[in-house]
Amino acid sequence: MSRGITRPPIPETISLPSTSLPMALTLQSTRKLNDGNEIPILGFGTYELDGREAYDAVTWALEAGYRHIDSATWYENEREVGQAIRDFCESTGTPRSAIFYTTKLKLNDGYEPTLKAIQFSLDECGLEYIDLYLIHGPLGGPAARKECWRAICDAQKEGRVKSIGISTFGVRHIKEILEMGLAVPAVNQIDLHPFMIRTEIVNLCHEHGISLEAWAPLVRGLRFKHPSIVSLAKKHHKEPAQILLRYCLQKGYIAIPKSSSRARIASNTNIFDFALDEKEVADLDALDEGAPDSPGPPCSHTPSAGLVTDWDPTECP
Image 1 (cartoon, rainbow, N blue to C red):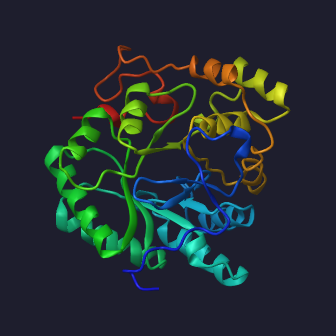
Image 2: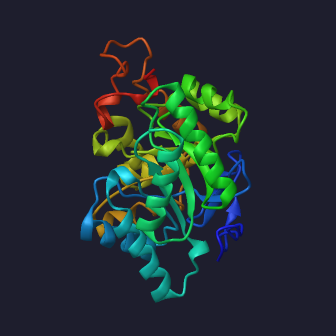
């Protein structure tokens, strides 16, 4: 497949608007991005997985039915993740077009360094094209972010990447990109879960058709014993992780859980045979710990930031 050819649709998927009935969701469900491409609603994250561990985990995820794999240059596992995808496709006869692969820009160093970084990621993963390429974070200041975005837009025009987006961008960062008049980001990948609902960012993304991806949707397990999560898990005969993932999907988010355990990787897909009702979703929303006026050091003004990171990049200048 040449780089200039548009990626074929993922087989046997459905386009899922956020207003779809929750029970209609399946492991094969997708969302249509603002550029027309489809993204599977459940992905597999590879943060802190490296070497053989990354290869095995991605293989297990693909065997369990995931068709969306999330990597990053920062994770230093693009080679292993790409190899696992290629080996799975070869051994099962699965076309490359059936796998949605995401990776991210490590450093916001400007236009030319960004183009080189994209080529580095392509060489590392060996997948010929990247389905979704994200600016990994807003650090570096407005000028650097704009030059990086311009480069990513050009890479998309060349067919090296199919969809483009941002990660951990706050309101000011999103508006800055929108004001450039270039392509609107297809995705903003940020930490989203009942304890960090980020209403202002979510509303802005919805307003501009930017899909939201929830990284760390399981809050790294740090809220599995929260009474509200435990209660819902018992009521629905599910694990706490499955409640948190189902919540994300019913909010219309793309969820990207991670695990190095084969059993948990499979268990995290067992979220399509039940649904939370509207009150349950609202009650989970009410668990938000992210009050914007909470005390904290610069770039860490929310107590929930410490659940998955020790600072909050969405608030950086």
